Structure formats: structure tokens, C-alpha cells
Length: 224
Figure 1: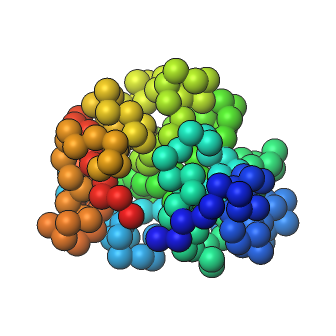
Figure 2: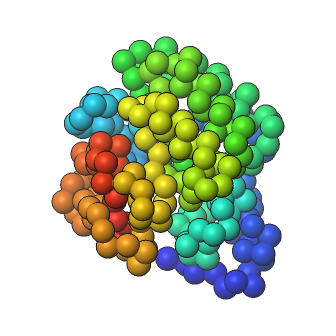
């Protein structure tokens, strides 16, 4: 994994390394919420409460939308993803995503799962609440992901409130918060919990594992 120095321009400016891969939502001609095509998620959930549902993903700009307290601020996974399309956190992002969600509601009346976020994070309280409104009006929508915005800060509190309101549909774990049962922790932060089975080869994909949205125990991720 590429590790940047603390003096690197992308670190100082809180941006991705790959500025040409960042798009303004107002000018983006394609879908924002994309079907999963990789092997890690596995395209579809294979067991559990969301069995049979397709995975979709959303990618924002890393660092620009993240809490600077993140333990992977310098060695972000995005440092090795030059071709991922990242979206700026602008006022038009949510309005541009709504037609995507409308289409998914029609295509998957029995449910679908949006992974928030492949890169980036929840960037404001209003953005978290926007997802809450989508859950309220879209019974087919389910969400899982991770956030480094902890619940003693405003964004984290909004995430926690949404998680409590939709405990079976908004499964977002706090990154590196071992005190929370629904956390996802780097191995150097905590060794208490379940080591990610996908990382250790015990399952072939997240869709075959389901612990991140089914277990109420912390998940440990091996440091990349």
C-alpha cells in the first residue's frame, strides 16, 4: 500500500492523489450508484437477512470527505486506486443520485444493498440525514459501510441516530472505535473481535460472509 508523507500535497490539501478521477456531480453523465463488479463484495449477498440482494457502490473523494483523525490518512486504500471515479461533495450530489435510487427501487422491489462508501466518508450531518430520508421512503434500500466519524462528533452522532432508527437496514460500523460493538477496527488498534473472514480467505467475498451487517461484535481488519 502506498504511504504518503505528512508533507505530501494531497495530504496537506486533503485530496485524493488522483485529481483527474474526481468528478463534479453536476457534470457527470453516468450513474453515481454503480453495480458491484469486483470479487471482494461478490456482486450479491449469499446468505442471511439480505440474501439474494445485489450490491451497489458509491465512491466519494478520500480525505476531502474524511475525518483527518483517520488512522489511514497517509496510507489510504485510495492511494492505489487511480481509476476509481470519485465524486465531489457538492450540493448537487444528492439530487443527482435520486434518479439512480428510483431506478433501483423499480429494478429490485425485494431489496438491494448500497455500500457506503468505497472511498470517502459521510461529509456532513445533512448528508447523513439525506440517506435517512431515502431509507424512510424506499423500503427496498439497505445500506452498509464504515465511518471514521465517531459519535462524539456531530456527523458521528447523526450516523448513530440513523443506525438506531433503522437497525436492520442501516448497518454502518464506526472505524477504530473498539468500545462500540458495531465497530470495525484495524488490527493495530484492537485485537478484540472477529478477524475479517474475507481477508483471511475463509470466505470468497463479503456477500458470502455477512458478518459486517449481521454480527453485533467488533470486526478486525488486517492492516494493509
